[in-house]
Length: 111
Image (cartoon, rainbow, N blue to C red; front, side, top):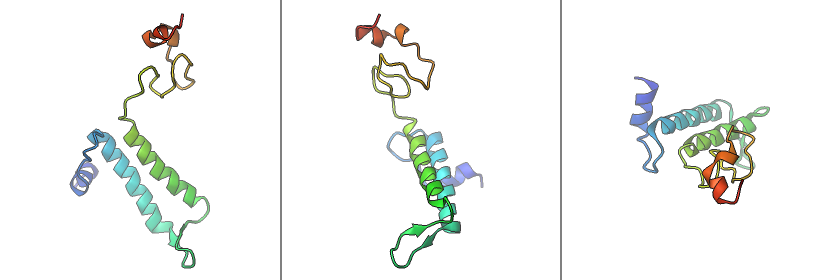
């Protein structure tokens, strides 16, 4: 059975409007985080908190956050902003968005 068919059968796509491909990718990342937790995590009996060797807690948190970020890729950008959510007319350092040629920038009084 392929990874994709396993994920779709084990976890049907969510009804929140996340495209199936992004949902499958997010679940794959979550599964890797869960496998790491099972293989390396221990529960402190005095506090009940999960503990990991070295920077394991940071790695686990980053993996779960990454799964959320993958799902958020399907969220449309705010009108009047670039694809990274930077409000116009401020230039975005992450994209090549030429704000001066953007109609929204002009509507907001840009040159």
